[in-house]
Structures are given as C-alpha cells and as structure tokens.
Length: 298
Image (cartoon, rainbow, N blue to C red):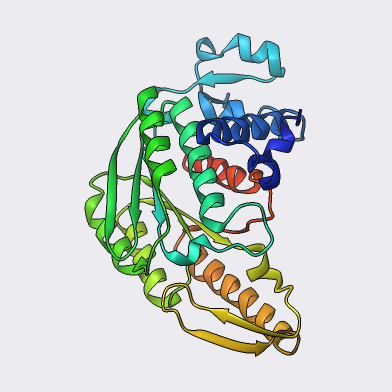
C-alpha cells in the first residue's frame, strides 16, 4: 500500500482508477508532506486561520490550534478567507501526448485540476470549471457546496482532448465572462504563439483577477530523449517532420528553456504566477504554488 506522500507521484496516481480518489489522495499526500516538513502548520494557515499579528484581538486566538502547533493563530472572517476560483482546461489534441510517462499531459492536468478543486471546496471556496478548444465548450459556475466537487469531477472525467485550440481568443472570452474578481487557474501546454497568449493573460490580470498558469509539458518535450532519425507529427494539423534527434537535441532543449524563461519573465512583470511542470514531476510543486499564491493575497 503506497504511503500518503507516494500518491503525489504520477506513476502511483495512474494506478487509481477513480478521479475522486485521485484528487483526495493527491491532496492528503500533499498535506501529509507539509506536516512532516519545515512547512509544518502551513496548510492550517491557508485553510481557516492566519498568524496572530500585533493589533489583533487576543479573544480571536484559536487555542485548539495553539495546542497543536504551539503557535498563535486567529480564525479568519468569511470575507477574508473566501476566493472564487475558476479551473480553466485546454482541450487541444496536443494535450493527449505522452512518450514514456504514465500520464498524458491532459491526464496530469485533469488530476491537478481535480486536486485543486478538492482543496478549494474543503476550504469552502467557490470554484467553477471552464473548458475550451477552438471555443468555450463548457462553463460550470462557481459554488462552494460539497455537491460542486462531484459536479466538477464528473465533468473533468468526461473530458477528452480533441482538435485544435485557440488559447488567446478563449482567454479573452473568459475575461469578459468573469464578473467578479477571481482566481483563474489555466492548465495548458501553451503550444501556440506566446505573444497573443501573454496579452490575453494580462487582460485577465488587468480586470482584477489573480492568475496562475500551470504550463504542463510531457517529460519528453522537456528532456528530448530521442535518438537517430525521428518522425514527429503535429496532432492538430497532421503535418510530419523528420529530424536527426541527436543533432538538434541541444538546440531544442535551449529553445524550450528559453520559452519557459520568456513566459516566466513576462508573466512575473504582469504579476501572474507561472508554474512550469512536466508529467514526471510529483503534484506537490503545483499545489504549493497555489497555496503560496493564495497566501500572497492576504
């Protein structure tokens, strides 16, 4: 039986059939890791409490939390804790790719989105789900009821990546769709021209939303483990290209690193969180980035 922390590894999560159990195991493994690490107490701080600060009323100290952590925390007010979240899922055909990992990019992104939805609902935060390819395909309005988690998981479990995508155009549509300040979490491989995508993300941010971009690539797209003559096919256009993999490896890896660096620089300047991921990585990196982003709001 895997330990809680092992459920953060994609190859272990792949053995769990049900998406609701995948989400639960990822979150419980993550929180277990926090409690066993220098971040002990971190999860408490993000769920319902914050550290006691000078000027706070001592009557608001939660003594049960003090007994567990030996630190002073006070209960946050409802308006202080709640943030509305949107999970935004790219359905492009390219997300279906994997080379040697247990999860495709899309399966990895779905597991991560499910875990974040699970975490938000259990923190009583309203969360919704938007999916898109060439256009917006589904939009589930945010709610914080426990039944919302079942709705999100049911929709996520039915999604399939098919056809081309229009990331920038759909992000602009989403910016117009969201009426109140929210946390927008995008899950995509971002395999399109970066410029329009960055501009659309800035539009979301300028509208007052907090934005986290989870840039999900396959492990092979990052490390390029191919040898000899290889034929690559664009899943969205059907175009093929034969290359000497060994001869272009260094240039290819440099190009991917430069793309990530460009996204990181441009989005940081726009106060947008950028999280580069590949499908070999445990899920805790992404969850920690979410919690750090949420903490920065208070």
